[in-house]
View (cartoon, helix red, strand yellow):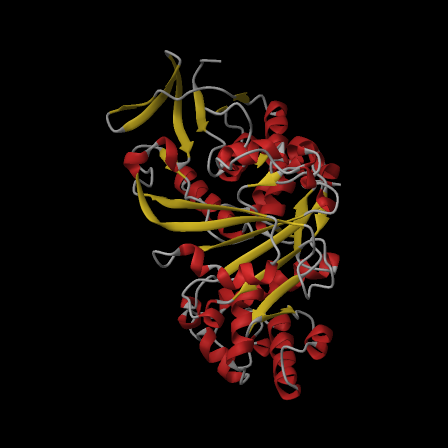
Length: 451
């Protein structure tokens, strides 16, 4: 194993998806990849924990799980739950790297938004908008016009722009143009465009319009919601990548403690493990491996709630996402709830797992998520965790050490993919080009590969 590598990846640690996907992408590009993990299982921080007994141990909960929770083996609990947008970047990356052949996805049954203490289905088509109780009659007409405008918007076709300059007009001005009220602006920005804060309002509108299009296109693929989730939990993803790696001649090594990252003249040349050195030209890792090259940028609170019932007012959905826009609860960051259940083979029969997450803003984070917990009552078991978030201070241009960012509070993978594309650009000096990667994949697997 200890020959020279183009690229070593440390850890499927706190951000396995970054490391796994990058290892797949670098392999598709013909790089020689070695993947080392100090853990004995795939997935590190963001693993799916099974059996349930292990989850109780991990969070030092007293005693063992009550019998009412069924067989411990029936549980696969994601510590950092995230859904995939059906038409989003992660699904495209999975198709490029062919990992989809190892996974089974199920559509999430509904997407909901919080307004004045209640939850409503997110309307994202004209028909749903007109039927929604979120808005009054006149508001519905204006919102429908706005959706039609977004669907037709093409920056290269002046006829579709209606006087909006995609690079200059702010999103705030676009909302004004259609005379949309505050509640509608809230759910459009946070439940359709999936922004976490309101900073986007004063940015050029093109990004927001593209995000709303992505939501609508993802929804159009399967109908119930734009989100997908793998059976048996997200822990299936890194295992799929481990299998994929073998196809390309990449090497995976679990249980490899990383003793030292070897730097010569300011540049990484290898990694030391159990007295031996694996040499490399580039290194990708999560913040836990290089604490001297990252900054703490905040904290995320996540609460795992185990329940015996679906969430109220969701038409008894066995899976859903709820977004609580920050304005609705006087905060700066949204609160997310994502719920999955026995239908995804992640819980015992009749059990539901809801996970609440948000960016911490005060010294009493548990109080911050109360609006979300109130929607879930009664909860059989509540497990609270608060994680520090890190961002790299060293971007790798000299050291060739490329560090991923910690996971944020969002319940979808779009921000993770932005980070992957950013690392790719820092490593290769070029933008991540989906079309080019798709061509390369066809060279390796043949054109019929993504069936």
